[in-house]
Image (cartoon, rainbow, N blue to C red; front, side, top):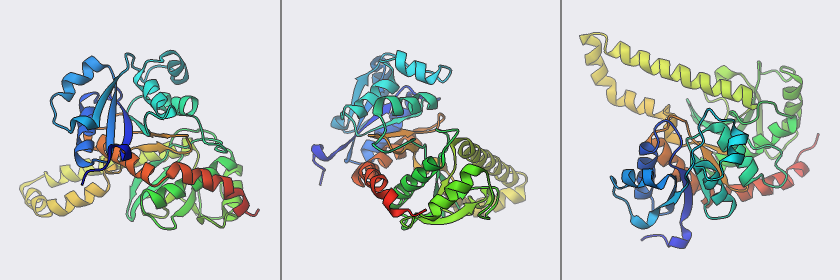
Length: 345
């Protein structure tokens, strides 16, 4: 049975953003609507560029529309200035659609700075939200962890970190299905007295929040082992963790492939373990989990990798459906409103 059109989640997708635009962006959008009748995609960008590419695919016609936006913001431009000057860019038009209620979410592989700036300036923060973190889903030995902030706020107050923990907990429980998610602070040691002044103070505040499953500090080496479900830090530390994660993962996968192709014997052995290896590597493929949501906004904005291909775009769009269906925005607002009453310093 098909869902009523009124129940469809509308996702505006930046067709011009990223290294592989517009082909991979459009292909991912088509894959998403072919997988789910619950979503409608609006491809935002230069219509004369989008339509010839879109015509190469087959999809339910009523589920993909095109919204013309003549300008494109490049990664070389100053983000805030570009957002203010290029009113008819795919990023600004898409985020304006979210602000005006024309779309439930916006997905982009374009300029991270412009997407983040537009999220705050155009979509706007929820009441009581001090800063909006960028949350990246990273693979671990126990599934997946939510890393916040992964790059939006380079310097953070302790109150920001506490809010990141609250929002991350809600996301992991209601979008990823992790019950009572474990929250940890990134630190140079697990001891309570370790770290700089901000982290030490945040530790005490989180420890006092009885409605969160705070498990203390976590060292970077314990993150891949699955030591926590929600990993909290400022955007500088988070981005370093994320990029190191991606770099090491890429090197290891490359070295494994090289070793398996090194000789006839290893090729034979590689053929035997290929199915198991493929399944294992799939768990460490970040594109399986979609993009990084900006939490705490008046609407959903999701930033994917600049190099995102169709699979990541598709999963990011479907991720928006779960976000909307689970009322994540409303849950964050309710939690932050009541949060101060649940913490005793």
